[in-house]
Length: 362
Image 1 (tube, rainbow, N blue to C red):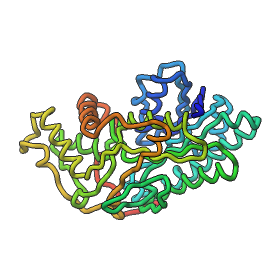
Image 2 (cartoon, rainbow, N blue to C red; image 1 turned 180 degrees about the horizontal axis):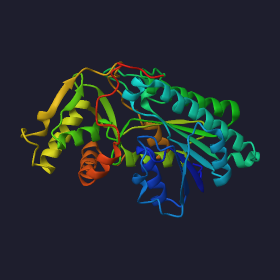
Image 3 (cartoon, rainbow, N blue to C red; image 1 turned 90 degrees about the vertical axis):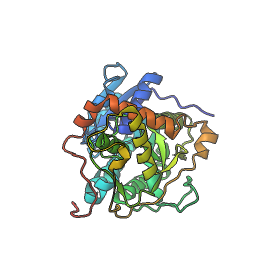
Image 4 (cartoon, one colour; image 1 turned 120 degrees about the vertical axis):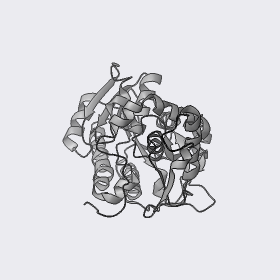
């Protein structure tokens, strides 16, 4: 197996949830210089990188991936030999209310980044191009919805059902095209649902934790029987590094946690652990699961996602280290210890429901 050894990695979206976990891993576990390129939208927080921000191998550039001139400047300044592309609008509910931003960032932004990488590579000698990688990080949602059985593999047909999923599917196709047409050396990964520390409170797990502690309702879409495969974010960060350094150019790898759970199971597990860790319940309840409520389902809600991660496990040797039970306990403990971060990070978002299709912005 040929090992690719980058010295400088440009990470887009590094102030986001998965991006910041990846940067913390790269700074703490490797000798690579990491350049974080992030626009710092509502979900981006440099606080999640406080532990590494003072390191000499960490640099930050506030920039929009849709800005070609800024990307060109950054490429020339740092001379990276790898790009790990995580910058994206990622919340399905927000994509229903405002699909235009998802098209702009996830499609136009990916195109702009790819083309700047191509221009940058044009100055390389043929042999030098072999020592460059463009790693595109995507989602299992591009495959659509599964029935009661089966798993998504790298060969699964794309059938996106939300504006978010469609925008990520389009970006995947652009990456593949830039490899086939322009010979940009790419690696692609598609992951299942991530969870862990520093996740923006609009997502299911942090939203439920914060609401429960305040005695607010725990809203479950439909019957709560939607199934997701849950992947601990630090396991994912390690998988991304393995894929970048040992993956085959032009190949795609699915990354999953082998932890299928219904949304209702996830929330009930959270409640049980909170009953143990925070037994002083809000007024009016004796158990946190008394706060569970059922609301109208999300439009076009996919019923089941499940990842076949056998390719990355067999070919690259990566396996997840956290079960859902161990990872969720670590996650809840982290939020309990960092409530100030959670409340500050939500900004203008007050944990209201999004994605009702009452008003679509374009």
